Image (cartoon, rainbow, N blue to C red; front, side, top):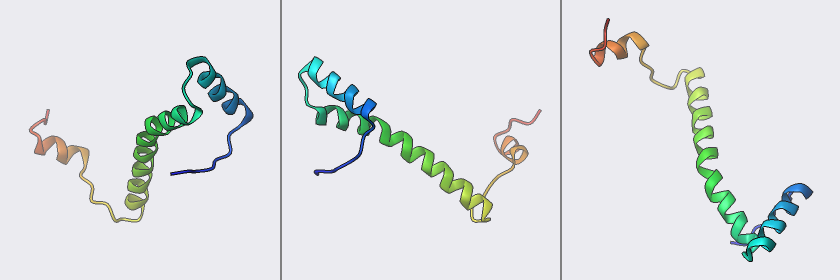
Length: 75
């Protein structure tokens, strides 16, 4: 899917240099960067969603003490 994004001059120069040094396309490296980073971004946003749900009282939680008891880890 063709997409247009604005890159800082520094990032653009780094990608161009990498592509020139390796003979691969800039698109190849942009795809690699996105593929490697999307898991992390999705994970971070899922945590933020859970925090907001917790603050709104819409997330079921278990206390540390109850969890330890359920797992048989009481001291």
